[in-house]
Length: 129
Ligand code: C2G
Image (cartoon, rainbow, N blue to C red; front, side, top):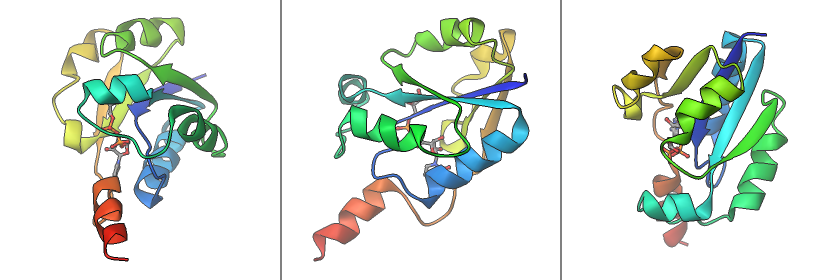
């Protein structure tokens, strides 16, 4: 089965995340999503509002998603691609160019982000209440 993999925090799950996962599911037969752990996110300098196990449970419940694995390091992409027989690595174009080194192992696709929504924006608008 044509397998797609993507990585992300998916904090405060929103339509931008859903659009991406739907598009990815349409690109193949199986979609694997690696959800960043809280520790890994601290390393990214990203504070998560929702803890890993809840973020993972929400992503696991999305009909487009076949498998959820934890993202704990930057390097794991190389072994994940081999281990899960991945044909395509895909991620939003805010990462454009950053993962081209994976082209040795699989196709690399950067998808356009959904406009006008982000977890940072949501947090900012929540502050107004
Ligand atoms: N995204 C999107 N449109 C938005 C917001 C996010 O398409 N409006 C996409 C991002 O481009 C990413 C995915 O949704 O592909 C998850 O976004 P984040 O949770 O912000 O992911 P990030 O923290 O960038 O983690 O190793 C890669 C990193 O783990 C990516």
